[in-house]
Length: 71
Image (cartoon, rainbow, N blue to C red; front, top):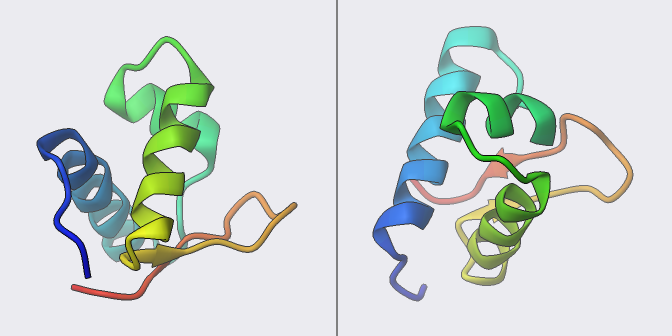
């Protein structure tokens, strides 16, 4: 696994916390609001990087598709 940046770690920890509290993963829109980002594309970019590095897995065309692969 490759290392992640501080911002990627914040996104990953946010996803983990959301799943722990709610029992399901957040949507892009929910993450955008929680992280106070102005663009959903920023969230998608972070999730893509985390997926490429092996920390998460997503299923295309599903709103709640983030699965944590590595704690």
